Length: 386
Image (cartoon, rainbow, N blue to C red; front, side, top):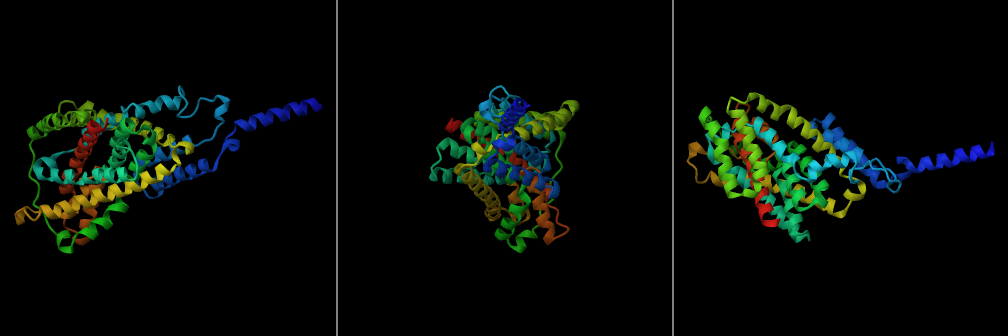
């Protein structure tokens, strides 16, 4: 009987060493709380639930402690594990182009086509990327790391993942979570900046209704857009090529099934895989570092710079525009790539001051320009820093 009890005790002791309770650290508990907070924001506040729920739950998955010395192949960094195989879509950079395919298939570029000068607002907002890049260099990051960090200012999660997978794989978890966090916090971050940088008279400014865009123009746009942007920045081809291809599927009118697949089941599937694996990559041992804290700070700064740059550019641009063609500066915030949330913020803030002044369609112009602009900026950084 005594031997049996001893045998049972030894086996229970061995079993205990395999449990998460025995292997948990303070870092694991901190990251689990972060994951729960993301899920709370998604469910209770409805901040980007399609992104934050997969990422939040992925953080929980990635921070279940286990005994690495026991040979368990279950974590995202254990080569050959299921999570590791799924994560290869992130590290190899093929999830983001598929996301861009879906974005292209659901994006209407009519507002930009009808008023091409709005493209300049999307370009101006990318200053946040290069501003954060220079600051990151000053803080001691390498040029490649600084480039990957700076792209957070574009408020484009797939682009941030694509670029960081090429330039700074070791920082990808922090960069991706930071980018998606600030995308979700667009309704919190942008309005105060917009109010601070505009006057009441500017907020009440009305813009002429956008002209109707023909079907021919919509079909030609993705073809011309691809040729112009990719001849200029060939390194942006994976993202820009899939973005414009998805848009052509939508606008051609003859590939409806393909367009619906791209903007529906395909993008939903990839979003799930991308969110969960990015979240799972934030294991405490890899994620809780000084660099991660700096990245979150630089990400916030780059997002603020991008928003402010868009608004201030419109104010300066209005100085040379005829009075009847001037742009409401409130749509300057939409130059970042958070589609369509930043355009909705333009609308929301505008309606606070004039309930009859609808800015959404105007704001969609710089918003979709921001998608193109962030991909072009990523291509520029990739071309110079690889």
